[in-house]
Image (tube, rainbow, N blue to C red; front, side):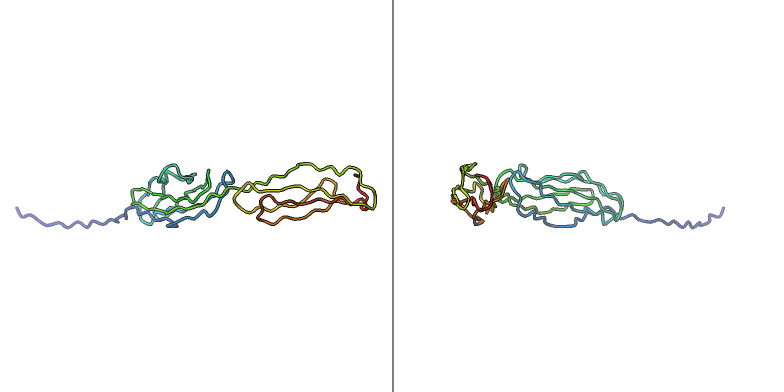
Length: 193
């Protein structure tokens, strides 16, 4: 018998493997108040290859004020992205750094994280109430009080009163510690002492 030759044409499309990219190589949260609102940032984790990119996000070292709020584990189809939300919530004053590591089936990416915790300024006043007594019409009475800042950042303040008729006051500088100011009641303004 005589054997023949057959030709078969085979075609196909190769699918590129997943490949991870991230929208930023660093995130600076700036300055946040200790115990205040959380700083937030959102990154895009992109699969610049084919298939489905899957992975997780971790922050090292542990114990820093940075956290992954949502988006881990992540998944992204070919040439698509997934959001990754981060938060910064300092519990103490100071400068903090950490590394966000994105580990996936399409490689690893890292993002440097930074932020500063600042103790919010608190002001104290002494005394907390002033009594002018009876002030005759045409006369003025002046009482003093002390205002000081317990925080580490500049604090400003202003004088407000439930009944401002005849009440005036001085303004403090933004940086102060133990500043003595005054409130004056003017009987000519028609306020009752």
